Amino acid sequence: MFKWILAGSALPILGGLWLWMVAPTHRRHPDAAAFDGLLVAHRGLHDATKGIPENSLAAYKAAVDKGYGIEIDLHLTADGRVVSFHDGDLKRVCGVDKKPEALTLAELKELRLLGTDYTIPTMEEVLETVGGKVPLLIEFKSVGGNDAALCAAADAILQGYHGVYRIQSFYPLVLRWYRKHRPDIARGQLSSCFRKEPDPSIPKTLLGCLIANFLGRPDFISYDHKYPKAWGLRICRRFGADTAAWTITDQEALTRCRNTYNTCIFEGFIPEE
Image (cartoon, rainbow, N blue to C red; front, top):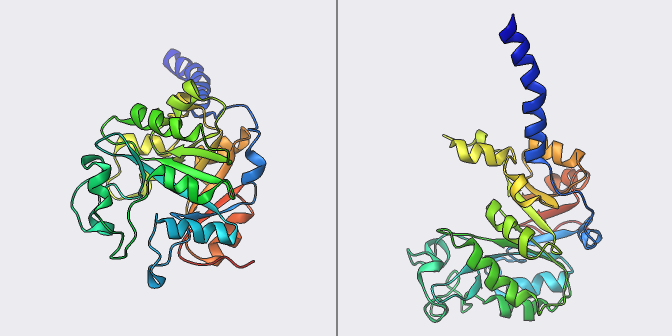
């Protein structure tokens, strides 16, 4: 009998601990209104059939011309420069079986995006192209524990930028860096329901539950749109966090997500007006 009483007493404590770990920050960021109802072009408004590759300056300019927000991805080169590139390696887009972190900026500039004349842009080139005309959603791709170096290098550039932007990452340590060093910048935790993937690992399953939110206390949650009823996502909504849906690839899903999420990240089609 005693062990059942003890177990019953422990459940509220464990539940409270879980809520504390998952809870987002308790604020409505001043820039939040800029992202309410915003459509965000994933990797820019790219279209390979028209010679506009993903993460290219042409894709960013096309999104600006249409008035869409833009999602960009950041990597740190071997010589400490910040570049905009999505994948963890260069093979699919540039035909080179190496990571962006393994090459210098000069070496990366020798490569071409999807057989076009476009090169991998630096963060400075992206910001100059966008020019503050549309909001940016900036994803940090941390590799090999370089989260602090990547954050510091990117932030040094962004401090001179006058446009509206938010940062996001799958890596909680990126959010922790921003929480400590730049608490004024809105930060988002990227995640998905990883337990539904084939052979999910325990760490990824826990991240899918947003169990590491206590490290960065995100302002918003950016979640795979296929899992709108994920427990961690629903709890964060109850706490008042903004949400973003990624990555939507058809109009039907976009229409559904616009009723649920503050921000919708899309790719591969032009949304109906």
